[in-house]
Length: 202
Image 1 (cartoon, rainbow, N blue to C red):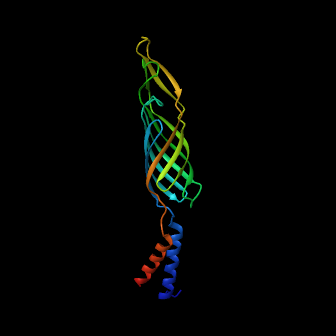
Image 2 (image 1 turned 30 degrees about the vertical axis):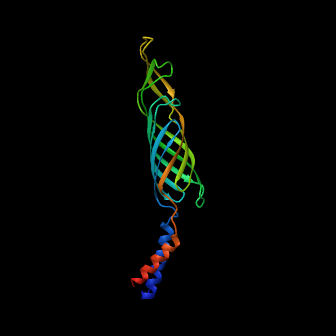
Image 3 (image 1 turned 180 degrees about the vertical axis):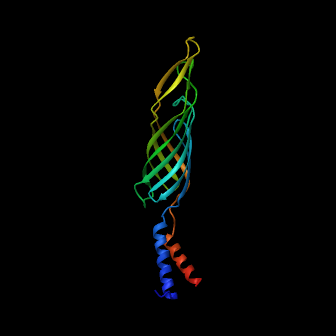
């Protein structure tokens, strides 16, 4: 094959177009979301887009004792999300995560005369549904942990501590503000600029 300047430019153009088709995305890859939810809770979740419709991430979440949730609990998890749409301003998604749940000591609502000490943390997983906008994420996670054992101590009754177990599945509803991960602008113009810049050097 004759590698003349004309053929070289033609092959270079094909290479740039092909690489842009394979590796380009309409959305930036890195996204950081932080927010609050009912319970109350706070969370931080950085994520990375594998492509425009699938992302993976890591989530840290902390629940604080309140009228609605009596125990102190926290979790670390690996997350994944799949988006139903690509071009809409509101992008609904489904997801799945697996992680490690910690439950702290708390007083029972029974006149605050007993407390419960959980023996260990537990592995669990959660399906999720939600939606993204440019800067807002809303999600609902169903945390499935199963049964976890604890020791109950009652101060007024004088009885010995007893070991019991209970199911600790729970639902979280939350909203967060996101940085990054937004849709790229003028992607076609950027591709043409790359081609023109390449030829100017020749």
